[in-house]
Image (cartoon, rainbow, N blue to C red; front, side):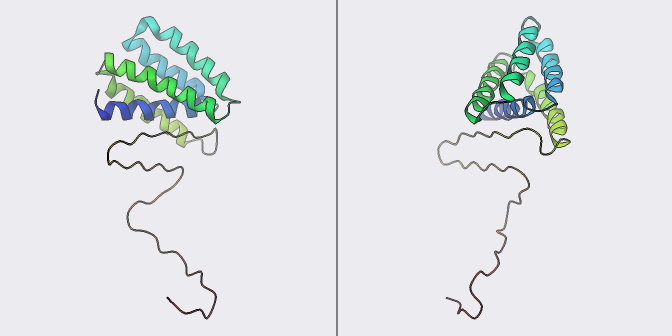
Amino acid sequence: MGAELASLASSAAATIANLLATDAWEQVKKKIGVLWRRFRPDQAAGIEAELERGHLEIRDADDTVALAITRDWESRLLRLLDAEPTVADELSRVVAELRQVQAGRPGQGRVWQSAKASGQSTVIQVGGNATLGQPIPLPDRRPPGAQSP
């Protein structure tokens, strides 16, 4: 499995877990249920039951439990992507739709992020707004009248 599919699974799992902690969890159940019915119809009812269970668990969960739920969904999605590589486009579409739901509900739920870097790679994770590129100059914090070094 390529890095792109692994990244997609990780991103999708984080989106699912974040939304399970909000009032939008039923939309997650519906969209992920449809995805499973299309590619693994025999598992769809079980997946929807797991989403319900995840919603109940994550509402009052600490960060450790929330991370475990995220990793659990990442594992499920990795296995689905490995068995059915054609699911990637559909999963990308579903994640994009769920992110629109997430963007429309600022401040609800909690955010959990995880990343893996190997070799000489770099991981940058941001919660909220960010600008990447040139550093933003910081204001001079020296006392008035202090000399520049």
